[in-house]
Amino acid sequence: MFRTLHSRLLLSYMAVIAISLLGMAAIISLILYNRALPVRQAYQRLSYVAAGVIARQQFGSPAPPDEQLDRLFDQVQSLADSQKIRGLVVERPDNVVLFDSAHQLPPGRPAAVEMRVTNPRNANGLIEGIILDGDDTWLFVAVQMPVAGRQLSIILEVPRPRMGILGAFEVMGENLMIPVLEAGCIGSVMAVLLAAWVARSVARPLQRMAEAATSVAKGDFSQEVPVSGPSEVRSVATAFNRMTAQVKRARQAQQDFLANISHELRTPLTSIRGFSQAIMDGTANTPELAAHVAGIIHEEAGRLSRMVDELLDLARIESGQMTMERERLDLGGIIRAVAERFSIRAHEAGISLEVTVEPLPTVIGDGDRLAQVLTNLIDNAIKYTPSGGTISVCAAPDGDGVKITVSDTGEGIPEEELPRLFERFYRVDKSRSRRDRGGVGLGLAISREIVIAHGGTIGAENVPGAGARFTVWLPAA
Ligand code: ADP
Image (cartoon, rainbow, N blue to C red; front, side):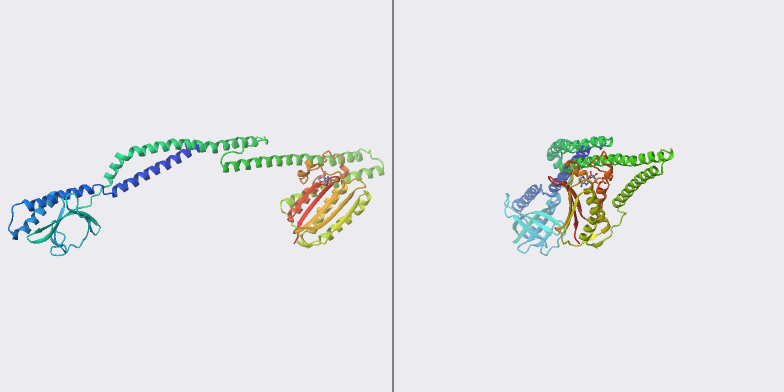
């Protein structure tokens, strides 16, 4: 029922509106309940009763002085009974109680209540005020008059009236129901519009993303969703686009990987089959021929086994199974030793190999693995540099680490290939027509893993007018 964002938003907005309006109504009722609306009427009523007392005192038939007080008390009592009020007669100035129609205050003692005059002379010329008697509040009207030669106050009081919760609701319903309903209607219309707007701005891009994700799942990686809507949705869209790009790349790499691995396997296997066939059917019938053929088979098998070793190496490094030593290394010594090993090969290829090593800070790591990286870089440089070229290996401190560069004067690397150079099986020359140059495109991938495991970086660039330059940076101890 409330599955869509739109309906949920609408529901929550409506709930908020309803709760606010109900809360508001409750607060107003409470205010009304506590507000003494009929106070004025109560004073009015007391004033009329008081006027009656005065009139009886002034115009009633005169009584003997010893009966005057009793008669006053009787009058107050009957008025109190008939008007449902309370009447007190006190003697000034100390407010000594002479009579209490409710028979609660003991006669002969000062009235132990707090009396506050709020209006010393109201429209009827009487005193108005309130009495605070513990928790109770009373409204009173007082008349001062001499009776039988004594200065008396006649105090008429009623409990302060309250509107009562029902009364409050009634007033609320009569006066406020319509505005509250109106506010509710306006709020609801706004809630509908707002919910539609918010839902649209959130749901639309999400829906597009869902469609794009479905297409990606079906194998269409060209999907890119527009980045729009609130910032949260925008960041999802950006992440989505980044993810599809990444998936596309990964898929491409996987396809290349498969194509490459089958190609790399097929070539040596084909030649192994062909040449072993030659031995089997007696084509290689002389001992020299047989030895030559066996030599080729041996070479191809060696190639296969190197490939398997490299793949295993890579898999082990990538999965973190290969443990790297952590020794203090003399990197300069390692570089010189590796270069030394290549000196004969370089000489044979007519390439001059120059090594420049500045005093270097100590690097902590696995010497054999780092030697493997250098071996791969120099090996590549020799493979891709024509006779008469130069390879220079330089090592120098750089920042808080060591920078090693291997530059050659070979063919260089096409700019567009640079970003993918370190991927597994990636080879610039995919035709493998230069099979004699050996590699299967795993060397740089392995090198990168080793360098990363040492906390370093590796990169490749072209030297304008010359060949390729590989740079390895390793942090110093
Ligand atoms: P391989 O075993 O094929 O040498 P690598 O991973 O070591 O594999 O290198 C990947 C590709 O990078 C090579 O096939 C080659 O095309 C290119 N490459 C590497 N080093 C150089 C270089 N010094 N000059 C030109 N191309 C290079």
